[in-house]
Length: 405
Ligand code: PMP
Image 1: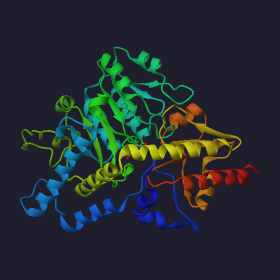
Image 2 (image 1 turned 120 degrees about the horizontal axis):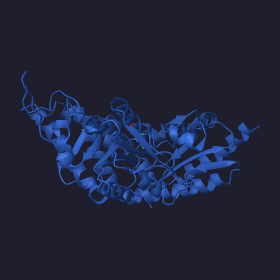
Image 3 (image 1 turned 120 degrees about the vertical axis):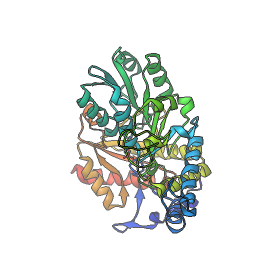
Image 4 (image 1 turned 135 degrees about the vertical axis):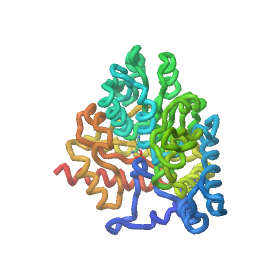
C-alpha cells in the first residue's frame, strides 16, 4: 500500500480548489502533476548551475554538462539500454517519433509500407503520413478485437515484402490496452522489419526494459512521468542510429564544419542539434529518482486498485459504456453515458472540481472505430485516492442524471 497522504503532501497543487471544490486530478494520461522534489531540481538548476552545456570550460557549464550526462546514464539504466549512445534527448514522444520518421524514413521508397495500429495517438500516425505523402508510402493498420486488444493474427498478416517499419503503442492512451511488445517485435523481426514503440503511456506505470522488449526504438515523455515539460527520450539501437542521417542541423551535432564539407558528431550528439533542455533534463533525473523511490510496481499496484474501484463504480451507472476492457489494462478508463456528449460531462465534472479529459484524445481513427465523436477519460497516478474515485463515480452519476433529463 502506498502512503498516499505522504505522497500528496509533496504536491502543493493538490491543495488548490476549483469552483470551491478540492481539486480531483484525473487527467494523468495527458500530463502528470509534479512533486516538489522535481520543482526544486528545476529551481536548483536556475539558481545554481544555469549555463549552457558542452561548450564551456567554466565551472558552471561543466556542472550543467555533468548533470545532463549523468541523467543520460540514469535513463540508460532505467530502461536497460546497452549504451548512453542509444539515449537521445528530444522534446518528447512526438519529437522522438518525428526524428525517426524523418531520419530513418529518408531511406524508404515509393511502394513501401508502414504498419501502425488502430489505437495509435496522432503523434504515431501523422509523422508517418507526412513521410507517406512525400514518398508515396502506404500505412497498413492493425485492427482491434472487441475488448480493445490488438488482433495479433491480423497484424502478422499485414507484413509483406514491402513492409519497411512498424510503429506501435506500448499502452493505449484511450483504452489502457497494454500491447504484447515483445511478441509484436519478434513477429516484425522475423520479417526483417524494425519496430518503434510509443511508450508515452507506459513510462510512468511499468518497468521499461528495452533489452527485454528487443524493440529498435522506444519513445517517451518526461511530463507524463512526474517530470518537467519540454523533454523526452528516444532510445534507439546503436547499429541503426549509426546508419541514420541527422534529423536537424545546428550546433552540438557536428564533428567539423566547413563550407566544403561538414561531418557529424558521434552518437548520441548527432541527433541533438542546438541547446538541449538541460534544466528539464536535470529535473527528469529527479523524477526518475522519485519513481524509483516509491517503486514503479507499488505505483502500478495502487493504480490498479483505483482502476478496479472506478470500473466497478461506473459499471453500476445505467447506460454507461466503457471502451477498452482488455485483460491487464493500465489505469485509464474511457467511457460515455448514453448519448451525453463527452464535453458536457467533462464541463459539469469540472464544476465539481474533477479534472478529466474529453474529446477525441488525439486518437480520431480510434474514435471512428467506435463510431463516437469523443469519450470521457479518467486516468490515475500515485497521488490519487480511493476517496477521490468514489467522489468521481458519484459525480458522474449525478451529472448523468442532470444531463439525461
Ligand atoms: N503517444 C501517446 C500514446 C500519448 O498518450 C501521447 C500524449 N498524449 C503522445 C504520444 C504524445 O506525447 P507528447 O505530447 O508528450 O509528445
